[in-house]
Image (cartoon, rainbow, N blue to C red; front, side, top):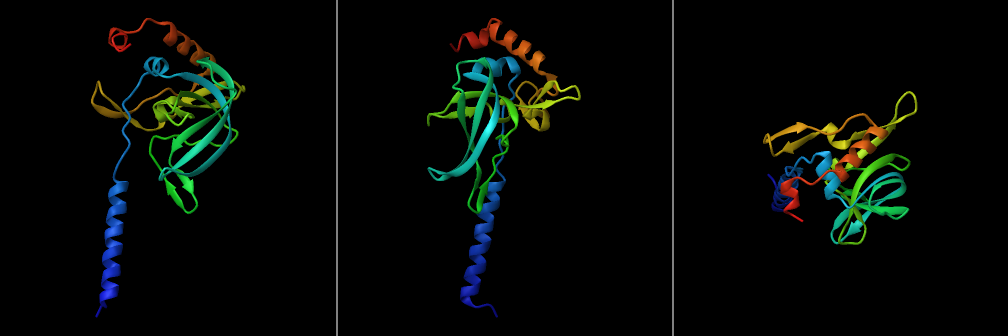
Length: 194
């Protein structure tokens, strides 16, 4: 026979498990943005090296903060070092993960589309879509791959989820594409927003 206390404890554990699993069922949905739209909508585009990462509680949520040293600027006027705020992370024994939020490793080189947050630091525009990992090919030349080339993004035109994103382009080709995106006339639908 199960005691009343043990029955209450089992009920409490089942309720806590249900609450936990219902939160885990939530997903992140990002609407697809092409490179031109992404470039126009962001405040700054930078190539940078991650110099630090740390996570802590702030206003009831866990946040990760990644520090970057700017190597090259494609758009805007960033400081030489900037701090990027990312939802989730590990604080003590607790960890929160938000799909679509990039994570960075000290020493890695990235291209980021960033904008100021209301907290005064920076955030990555459209999370994984605004994150490009830099890697070197056999000749040592820099090549970029967008984080979204690894997972499905919702395309509002086709109304379907599909992997999208730029994969394995040269840094020079990326520079050219950003330059074209920033100097091309705005499409009519974007002009009306301004």
